Amino acid sequence: MRTRAILVMILFSMFITPLVYAQDDVTPTSLEVKVYPDGSTLVTYVVESDPTKVRVDVELFSNNYNNLIIRDEDGIPLGSTIIEGGLTVDSIGASELVIVYTTSDLTTKDGPIWNLNLSSPVSTLVILPQGAAIFDLGAIPTDLGNINGAQYLEMPAGEIYVSFILSMPNLIGDAQTAINEAETYIASLESQDYVLIEAHSELTQAKQLIDTDQYIEAKSMAYQAIDTADDIVETANSAAVEIALAESSVTGAEEDGRTEGLPQAIDTLNSAKSYYSEGSYLEAETAAKQASHLALLTDEPSSGNTLLYLGVAILISAAGGGYYLMKKMRQEEPTPSQPEVKVPDFQEKTVDLEKIFVINEDLRLEDREVIKFLAENNGEAFATEIRDRFDMPRSSTWRLIRRLKSLEIVEEVKVGNQSLVKIIKRYIN
Image 1 (spheres, helix red, strand yellow):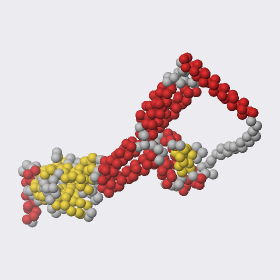
Image 2 (cartoon, one colour; image 1 turned 90 degrees about the vertical axis):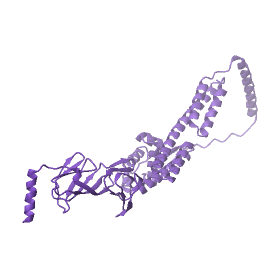
Image 3 (cartoon, helix red, strand yellow; image 1 turned 180 degrees about the horizontal axis):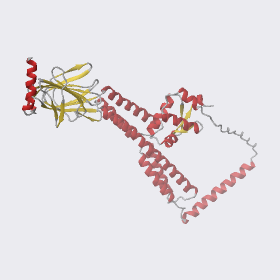
Image 4 (cartoon, helix red, strand yellow; image 1 turned 45 degrees about the horizontal axis):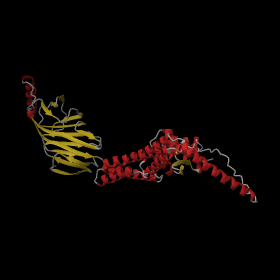
């Protein structure tokens, strides 16, 4: 009977007294922030409330409140209205409010690094995801430990900043994998006689970074070494083409008797070859282009030297004629004819694609397309042809070929400085 009378009095007061909204009517007692791997957070905020107030305002820590639940000390759900900066809770009769919600407003991500930021009026329990490694803190925790495999920190009231990285072991492994991949790739190019000093230097930097726990930078530097190696090889190949063109220009000048200025062209060509051998490919390309230009500027000797060259030619001709007469006078047995070399006929190869795809059912789409391309080209193609056909970076082409070799689908044969990729005999009909 007494309880009913109190309830009637409370209801009556609602109609005769104005509604009160006051943040001062609540006192924060505890705050817990649990961080999930995707950056979302579960916030559990407990405040003491004046049970005589019909409604109270509660400041919260974000602007978005998902899965919002508010209960009193007895676990009874309470209604609320979202206002700027928090909530207005229908708290009449409640001496304690337990506010639970999820939000993504409290975290930001910078690469692999997560940052938790909030301002709390009370000591706050922060629970990080399993496997998280703390990167930086804005204040010294008053306590820390482990809850079910997840690290927790008790942070003092005020501005809270916690920076952490997820899956630290994977970060280390990814950096080491990138370094191993760069090392293998650079070694494969060096086996083709490319000089990759700059790429080696970047690979060394990557190893130094991983030794100092700078795993993200180490991974980035390792892949930069691969890109640098690709650039060097491109420049080397371009220089090789220019050297070949310069040699052709010099030979043409010699055959045409354009010896005036030719020694300078030959010297420049030799410089280009020297640059190439020491790995200065850009200088080699420039020198080769200059040699070609000089060879084109060559001319026949002046008239003053023509008589000299003509006299030398007559003497050589006379000597050659005498040698011919002496040879004719000697009676030698005829030289036996050379046996005829039989050129084998070209045999078209048929690749058993069905057999390849059945045995290797987990092949990637790009692997299948390259295998089909090889099948269409009599079972083989140069690595450069594969790269050009599918517009792939050199390093990606190298990894794909390496993958097919590990599956024993193809073999790689060196033809000069090029790699010929061939489907193995097992799959050839």
